Image 1 (cartoon, helix red, strand yellow):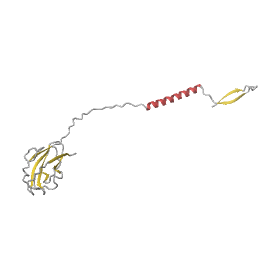
Image 2 (cartoon, one colour):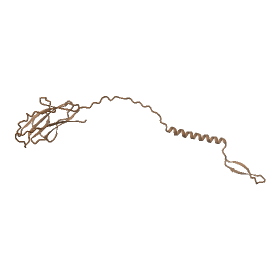
Image 3 (cartoon, rainbow, N blue to C red):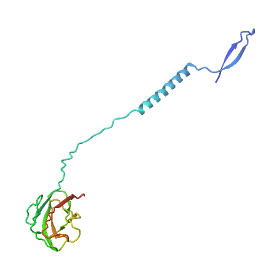
Image 4 (cartoon, rainbow, N blue to C red):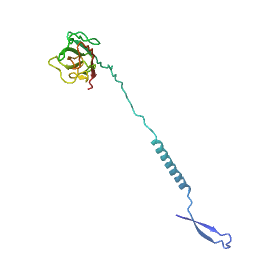
Length: 198
């Protein structure tokens, strides 16, 4: 839409009008409408930006539960001879294997008890010796124990031993071919209990 204005040229003596096409100027109602529209758009953008950064609170609840008391298990061994004497940090009688001769095999039994609460695997090792061989096995003594000497290889004894359980261990001693007459050979046996992991 265009609007025409009559403009008179000042040098025209006849003062005849001529018409020029001019762009339409906005009227007051249209200016007001444009301002209102611009204001609404600005408000909408501002609300959109502000609401995007809003975080809403959420409800949270927590309840404590007592974990009770944790008690560590125990692992301990006791060793007793055939008549019940405690051998822990003590000496096993050497009477049974005194006066050994070449070819002799002499046995003694001990009882090993797991006095702890944790299952354990039992092994026995003996200090190295050039005079005697020491063999061990689980169970009562009968016959000759074969296999590796506990002087050279720690020997596993029986199945895992539960807390409070006991096992009989047979110990056999014999002379080595290099032993000589009247020779003494003290030795130490070490019983080791290793925790069995579930």
